[in-house]
Image 1: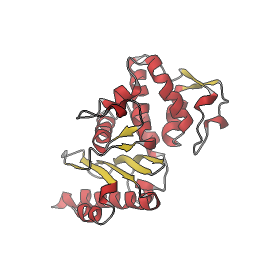
Image 2: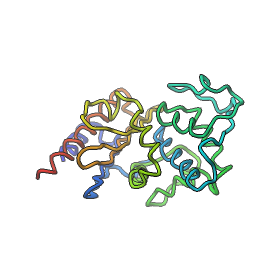
Image 3: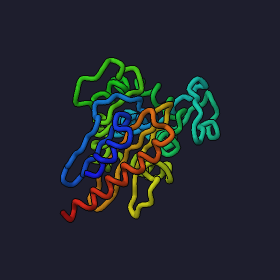
Length: 245
């Protein structure tokens, strides 16, 4: 794959990725066990967890969660423009804003309220996506690795009817950067992450044979967006070319 050459010459130690063809199940995983801060990519499994609670009947779409001022965190489109601090916010509003606008306050509200309705903490549920034993830090810090996020995305795609709202919101998220930094004639549903030295993206590419992709970077903030866009383009080219091999 052309990607191997690109990675070798572009900060290989600072990049992890996955590729998964949803038709033939071909899978490529690079630095899959490398631990990184998840940044806002964690909002996908977080909203998936709440979607499960809705499906189970534990909560419903209009369940309102308390927004205390301590949960405020600046974002692209701040929650306080719509709801004042110390008020109650509908669950579906929080779920949409966490994905479409990567609203940190919305995510904080979802996170701290999760254990009030679920039988385990969110981190305990999230770690279930791992195929390996994870460090204790995974239970208390916003960490992940590419292998875990591949399993998250497989679940999201395989249960696309249940998670339809999440996928639709991912299609509407950040239209011109990261995976969407290239112009494609097909849809891409993605969720990016941007925190400190970390820049990530993961999503679904709706090519003729749809595929899942995730690219996770650290320590290359200034060029990360371009690296992520480049890697996704190589994956798209590979996904199309192999059909004719």
